[in-house]
Image (tube, rainbow, N blue to C red; front, side, top):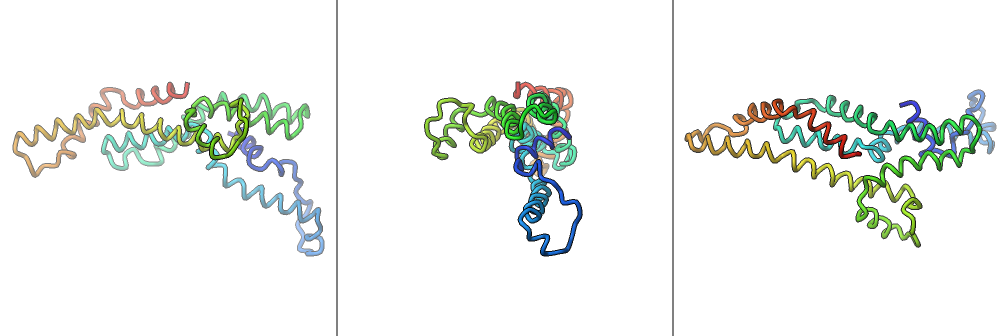
Length: 244
């Protein structure tokens, strides 16, 4: 995780990675407004402000989006309300994201961070090589139709190589592709539970139990079906396979 946060700083605030913090804070306005001191102060301020963007980058460039949506739809299909709680779902999604993204982060560490810290490449080269594994991961999961949409509206000319597409074009295309994939998985998850609801509703109707809520009666059967099918294992396996 420490390596990934370092990588995010490469992507978000490349111009301030080498910024030096002033040796001592001073209230002397004359020293503060000097160009060199003012520039360093702004760099430090931007560094701390940019740390708040890290969660957005995690959501936008990793597998987290698809996983959290699928888990949320699974809970809705079961009809269990707030069980499992949001904290549990988010924690599981985060650790699955770390598991899925670890090979990509290892590539970033090998290709960019280690050579940079060893003084073998410059800061600019390190940033370029750090972005490459992330873009390759996103391009593998991005639909061509979605990528063409944003390339068209970005007015990029003569894009003959997909690897030359800038990351600010790839990210939104990746996001809408992930949204579609997540909802496709969610649709398949709803089918067996809808069947259970229909069966229970028809049985109650045949028995004349009009005042009894079908959702209340079908809930234990849906939970039983999910447990007997080892649902969490199957769901996790399917999500992991979807990123292969």
